[in-house]
Length: 185
Image 1 (cartoon, rainbow, N blue to C red):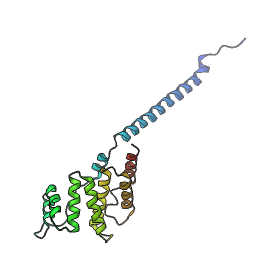
Image 2 (image 1 turned 60 degrees about the vertical axis):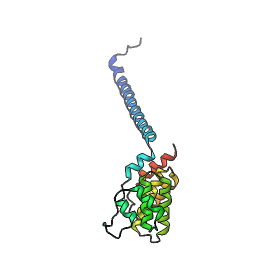
Image 3 (image 1 turned 45 degrees about the vertical axis):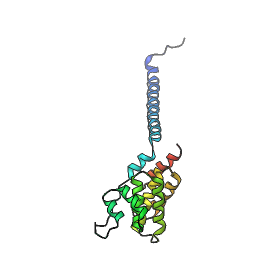
Image 4 (image 1 turned 30 degrees about the horizontal axis):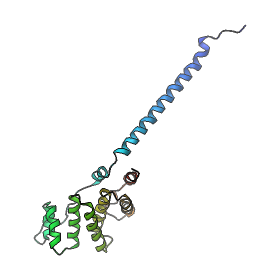
């Protein structure tokens, strides 16, 4: 005759199974939570959100003076429409073209901002120019807002990899990867 099993013999195995089942359920819940968070972050990602995350308004570093161009004076007064209109009737310096490009950026005309900033970069031959670095930074942001992701990523990587660039710390690897994710949507 077979001996009947008691609860004390089956108890430890049943407790271990129960602990393993709960452990698997908790691990699956955590994985599911991270998956939901990842999907949420992916679908709420937008060029506007990324742009606003790192955009800082340009401030002219020169002290106000009487020798400033009319475009520069209008820029300091945040009269972006006036800057754009003066661009049509004035002989422009490189700084005036830059400020015009920045005015286009401030008025959400990204394609014209891109054109102006590209002119500035082409005109400045000195690779150590603060104005050239600033134009490249804002050009990358204009590409981002204009949904030209490949050009934005290329320029952001160039800025990040240039150790002497004034804006190299603005574009982290994580930020650039988030811009890359925008291409997948």
